[in-house]
Image (spheres, rainbow, N blue to C red):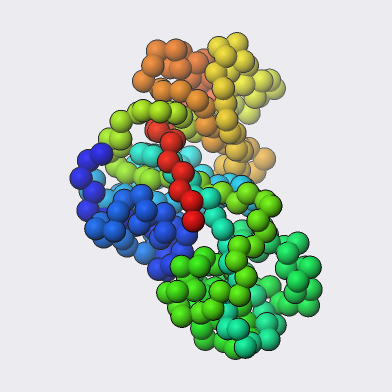
Length: 278
């Protein structure tokens, strides 16, 4: 990996993005909290010595539309350098003496824990905020509230851990991409290639796009459709496939699928072999 001076992540301090950034890049790297995924990308695009860590998908909440759209349109000229995953264990944090009337969290943890909340706090008000760390901040400022967040947030904001872990029987994994201007990570282990495809709006074009994956025996692990800006009822596709785009075999397949597209762009090939546990 090339020299990295700074890593931008989705803040504030104490988010799961913060935890992954510290684990993956090390505590000696300067970690820079950002308010949004767009802010992360703008900041990262200013220097080849910066990396941007962005969430891509949660196993309960699904893909992160903002990240997918940024990669589809390539406005910041960033590529995926690595894919890393975090196996998340959530906690209910607050004050032991409080009577909980309101629970704050990000939309994904609230969705993941919806049955647990219904069973344990049926009359509580659920409030969606920008991050789990922001949820913890609300609890610091407001009595009779709790947050679904990380145990790290409880320590950071001097709150009690009321229940941990929540919803043990359902896996909760979040995938992140490390973005950079010049990806330089060796392609070892499991390698994936991401493609941005703007398919022709003609009968059979989607079939023509998908058929080469079967005939060439190329495994497609993910396909996400996103509406095209300013073109109602037209869609772009974000596709993940197994393999290295530097290899002639996969390049041949990508050439075939591009014939069904107005534009078809390789975002990048990258390793996917790091999983962190809390």
